[in-house]
Image 1 (cartoon, rainbow, N blue to C red):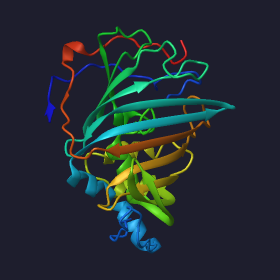
Image 2 (cartoon, rainbow, N blue to C red):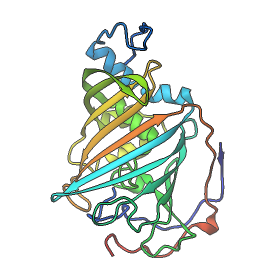
Image 3 (cartoon, helix red, strand yellow):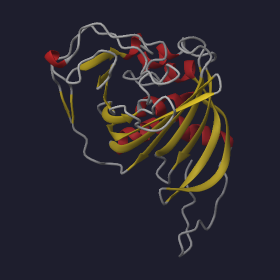
Length: 285
């Protein structure tokens, strides 16, 4: 459920800054009595790619899920990790995350207040943003205006966008079965094309993916994806490489994990009066 508040405010947010300046398929149906798979028939590469391309549609039918995110940036020998937890409603393309930033030494939450993020169609809202923004105010960002479509800018990839990216899946290989949160899943590895994914994406995700075509060195994005026996995406890891931005040439690995499907999700967008409209300090200041 999404409670629509008044939206507005002209603030433009920089990438979530931290340290380096960037904060940036089915199971075999038979099982043995002890829970191990009785038969692990490898799917064809073609059927595997098809299952991955349909995974966003499967999530829409699932409705909602709890989310864990991790984002790791590597630039100039410096490695920075950001983690988040929350929930997401795929039917409304909205959710809320609590994102924990490391301190400059790379330790989690070293003096930084966690950032509350609201993900909504076409927008990202951030509270405890820092950079001169009052603690009780939100920053609103138009995701289509970002060079990466907010695939990494906010420190977490929108879960629906992460699944929609797989609509461009190609060169898919089956890597076998694994246990993930006690659930047997099938592991796939391949490359997705951002442009192809954008063309096939839903109307809600397409603007962000179209924008993302401009922000990376190449449209080809390597991934690892894990599907459960219902074809639901349980985990996906994308590896991006920046052509521009701060820092230029940085590589970013974004991981999204989904569990507890069908969980209740209630998101209320900030009122217009709660959105900061002042100047936001540049990253690193």
